[in-house]
Image (spheres, rainbow, N blue to C red):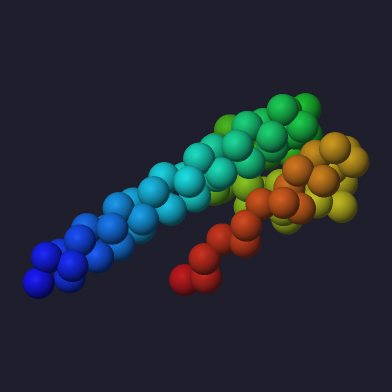
Length: 81
């Protein structure tokens, strides 16, 4: 019985840690895009933020600077609704 509880606690802890790592990775991608795409975002996607900005940059990928294209290509695709 105690081993089952320990395994359950370890599973919950591992799941929480994995989620934190995924969120941190997403923040790093956001910072990379912000650095590489500042001018492109102001020019083509003025006023947009977050997912809306990411989608705008992906939509206009052909016109982006090479550094911005590289950063945008590393963004995950948004979930389909």
